[in-house]
Image 1 (cartoon, rainbow, N blue to C red):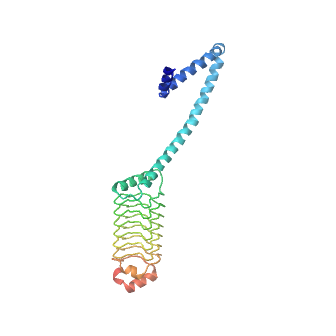
Image 2: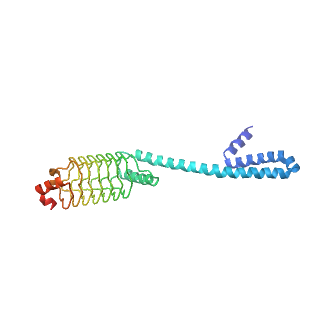
Image 3: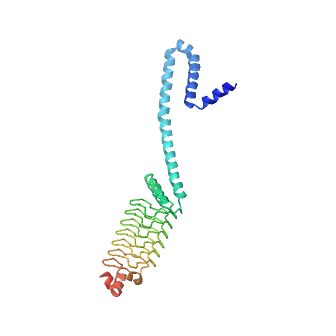
Length: 273
């Protein structure tokens, strides 16, 4: 009994060998039982076997493709879940490794068509996210200082109190984003599109916003101290005051609503002329 049990234990640890043994035993049993029918009516048996073979091919075609498709979807969802879990694992971890691991997971999620990502409090300092799509994502309180986000899609993204200090956001899309209290100090935002964004108390000190589109933005208490606003578009912006704009480095050729334009020409003609 011990030898039989030992042989059995060894056998079940070899699934391929076990499968062949089961196949051999079943073949002997089925062929043995069917032998009288083969001898008596081979033509009819042959036709039935062919019919079953066609049914088997159809099952493989339909069920096989369906199972492959379902498996592929399952594996993709599993990978997406893994990338999101890794981002969550590195959340609030301020290190170079965490930053680059986060970037890698963001890019992988983008390749899988995932753009709405929870990046609250994530550390992304000095990383390259150029061309990345984070539209509708949550970047509240994240640290992207000294980052490169050229032509990044941040439309409708929540980035309240996010740190973009000294970041490069040239040509980035920030339309309808939520960036109240956000730090844009020393940031490069040349030709960035911020149309319709909520920028209440945002800090653009020493920023480069040449030809930036800030039309229809909410700019109450935003700080433009020493910011270069050459050719910036402020048409339809709300919350702007003469005091805010008087601290800018340049307003040359910037666009404003007619009423505000008259006041600027009256109080700070040197900055707009």
